[in-house]
Length: 324
Image (cartoon, rainbow, N blue to C red):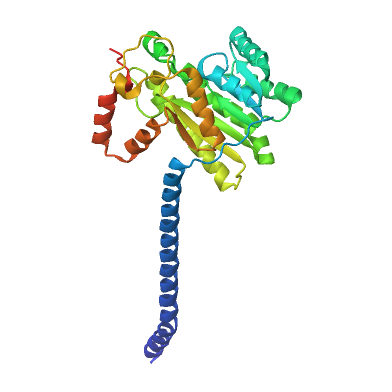
């Protein structure tokens, strides 16, 4: 008798709650379907916007009176970025380990009527970067733009210099990024204003022969930039931008005699043109840029193709330089 009573009670309870469970499942499924449709719709909008911006890019923002720090301003693309920032009206903080070449950059800027200050710093040491940040805040106040131009190899150095010690490579190319982020980005977040520009070479997209530490470090810089972008997005900080710029060293003419495998495909540009291209992407708040611009799309294609296809393309291009 007790067993029959229990069974009838359970049956009654199941009959009562079963429709509720079904309704909850149907409701959850409807919410999921709405979310999927919403994501697909916004994805299509994003694709259409990207195509539209190919033909009508976003307007250039002004950098006038921005305080821009350029790390690695003593030569090459870093020097040209510093000079062009000053020409656009920015107050440029030139940071380099080489005192004489850095002061030459500042002298060029001042001769052209720009505003710049020189700071000597070995950025691979955490305490040095902290001292630099303290000095700069005392002298010039808030730093709103950060360009890290160290660790980008030239084609000449890839050919003539042996691979560096892995610790030296990682410290210069990657670890020092963290010291600058730690010392300058929190204030950008507080003010919700700023721009961090991370420069990587082609080694951040494809392995370079006999340069594994460099390739690993450059891949890591790309991950750092993407992680920083996500951190800002999740914390809803929309006034601080991150731009990851890929530089193909064999494209930038360093007055060398490197042999291009497919010169008609690539050609070369001057460091000044490279800097102008980078600043164009920065001033349009692009999350990713490339020097030259058209190779950015090749990088995107390589990410979605099967591994075998990407290997064939990389073997064909071989970074454009005959290292043999």
